Amino acid sequence: EVQVVESGGGLVQPGGSLRLSCGASGFNLINYWMSWVRQAPGKGLEWVANIKQDGSEKYYVDSVKGRFTISRDNAKNTLYLQMNSLRAEDTAVYYCARIIFNNTWNNDYWGQGTLVTVSS
Amino acid sequence: DIRMTQSPSSLSASVGDRVTITCRASQSISNSLNWYQQKPGKAPKLLIFAASSLQSGVPLRFSGSGSGTDFTLTISSLQPEDFATYYCQQCRSAPWTFGQGTRVEIK
Image (cartoon, rainbow over all chains, first blue to last red; front, side, top):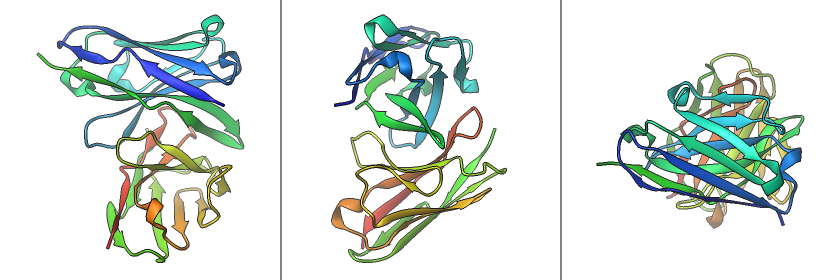
């Protein structure tokens, strides 16, 4: 069974850092692009970043460029999101999602999310 | 960036109703359009990919159509488990963007 499980969320002060992890099971991470998507409390979905299978290509939404870094360790079947210089507006549930190409790109499997709260 | 606009933002419907949600892209995205369903406290679930292809395991009452800038998600006969929020997503170019969501509520 395909599963992705996020961890690492919590309460952090503005300006602080946090690293999220996403463990993959039921499939080989090395074969897939991966995404991070977030959802602020009571708000809609916002795509954050994508990373290619070998980590050679990364894409970010403008609001996190220079502050967040997506990375992966295929040997550990784990995806990461390093978040620095955190702001109140980064408060959200962060989802890890697998990407497949099936005529077009889409996110076919999602984790349950991990909550990041940025507050003093 | 490609802006995605959904309408309506919310709707009330009864079990058995036919429901239609529209999504408009600010520029042509061909068929690079996906639809997701999200229930409170849960992760999004892929329903439709490539504008009109049904994801495995999704009931046949869900269908999608459109190409270019205008897209539609239709639920042919609303069921109790379909009350949720629906999002469109374009994956034509980065940054991938979502519509603001359509909340489907019980009338």
